[in-house]
Amino acid sequence: MTCLHKSLMAITMTSLLSGTAAADEATTKGNLEIKSDDGNFSASLGGRIHFDTYLFDSDLEDPISTTDFRRARITLKGNIYDWSYVLEQDFTGGDTLSGYRDVYLAHEFLNGEIRIGQFKPFRSMAEMTSSNELTMLERPFSSATGLYDGHQFQQGIGWTGVQDCFTLGFMAFNLRDAGTPRNEGVGASGRLAWAPINTDELTLHLGTSVSFENNNRNSSDLTSEADYAGRRGPSQLMALTPGDLGGDATTAALELAGSYGPFYLQGEYTVGEFEGNYYLSEEDFEDEFGAPAPFPCDPEFGCYIDNQSIHTWYIQGSWMLTGEHKAYSKKRGAFSSAKPSGDGLWGGAWELTFRYDTMENRDIQHLEASSTTIGLNFYANRNVRFMFNYIMGDDDFTGDNTDQLGVRVQVGW
Image (cartoon, rainbow, N blue to C red; front, side):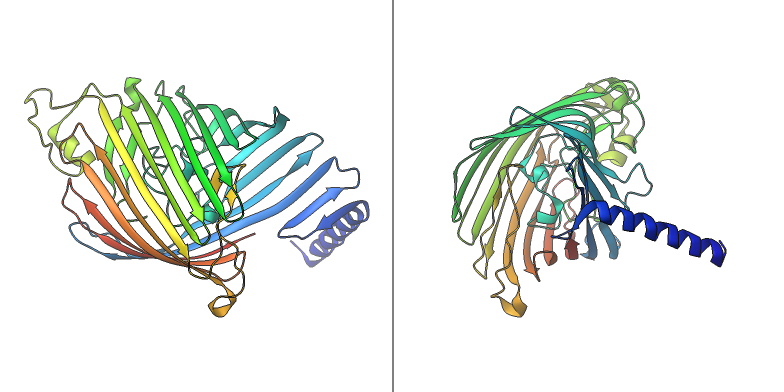
């Protein structure tokens, strides 16, 4: 492009923006927002950057210590008349389609909104917690990083809303996101959260969710995995329903959480049933699960995998050392991060965290993995946070005990 062309383009863009500014209103309260004078059109621009460092203390497995952009997202949202929209792109996704996160249209309906497009199925309190608000670097096993492996954002239609102290959400979806192959797999999920006590000082939360996924033509496998030593570390396959067999997976979960002053506690217990009735050769079993089958295999057909019952639960909590309180979001039915009061060391807030997380396949002997995490979070301000996690991994099936030190620098706006 020549200097003349660049100059003409700059003049044109300046003219367009000047014309828009004369007609519309722009605000910058936390993010950049533009709204038309008549209120029929609006757009706001937000984003987040999560930059991680992973250092491993290897055991049987030997993962690579590295750095990683965990998230680098731009989010555009707003309204067109009485419809709202969200368009979110994560540049760490690898390509445009794989980077789509929330991409949907919404319309108010029955004290809530109907969503059409790609978004998270309503299941798991941990999954409903924004990545900007996570207590630890990663979500527990009862989320799309474990039990619902690879099925975090799905395409379909759903409704979510708040009625008094109840938060509800339902979704029917295709088993794909924008970056995965077209298929005929289907699923449905629903979640109910109840906060009978929710004050500035005290919150009590109870919840439950159910989920159903059914493989069909061209579907990928339904799997459950445990990243027991953190992201980029070793992963233990916990359950497998091959996509070409048309099997299904169902889950049911209970949630209990609360906060009092600077203290916070949260736990979930989830049971999943993965359909089996197939054979794997002894070599394929070891490749998939990381160790030889702990039961006799047929010399001709191989290792028979029946239906698999998965149980996973966690308990996590934190103590705001500088006295802040974690707020509760009724819209999401989940807790948010505390907002720094400015009274702590270096003017920020400090949070001591812990979690115990475990997952078990009760139909394959010794197929169990767990992790214990202790952490420290520093909130420099409302938008910038530093996170430190030490994760102690334990894979009963392979005997591996790899640990990880994870560090995150995070900004969100």
